[in-house]
Length: 126
Image (tube, rainbow, N blue to C red; front, side, top):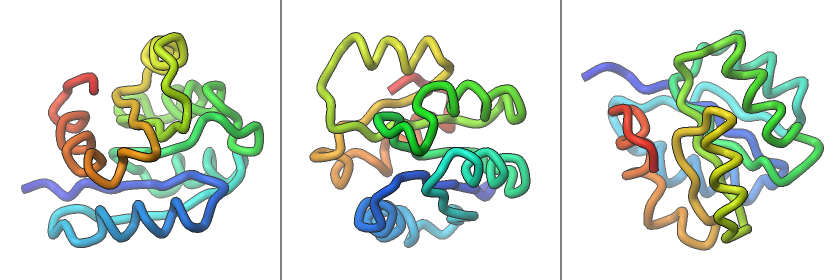
């Protein structure tokens, strides 16, 4: 099985640590980096060649949906999965229009993150 390279971007150390703990045990998955600000996120997306970027778009520090669009300009094959505290259909639509492949509510990501990454990597929108 092909290795899946994952980049995590969130201001919260707690959220980044939780994502690492959920995904870190997968044998063919590797966390290739973490970012807390847009410049760092874009640099790591370019340097680390992730297959998946798991990010919070609600924070201006990470650049929101504009950062997701910029990532897709430099890495068009990256699967972007958004973690959000907002249960808002309009925001989900904006994420998908920006090129995102998945949207997970933060209170539920412990249960759904692994399946969402698998689905996004297989080409599904989730």
